[in-house]
Length: 60
Image (cartoon, helix red, strand yellow):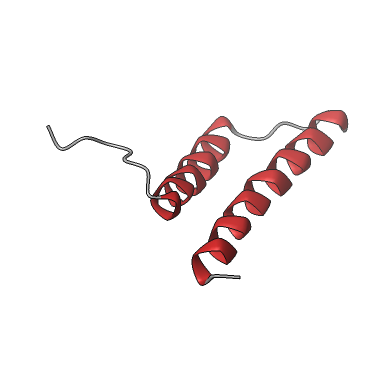
């Protein structure tokens, strides 16, 4: 397995476990701050995009 694939898999797993944790907390009637969710997903989504070679922002 390539090193890039390992990082990609780690990013996907981290997004998945965060979703599970938020669902569990919601089931326990707890709230997760919106800012935490936005920061978490923006960081890992950018990571996924960079690893996959996707253009996220155009320089124009």
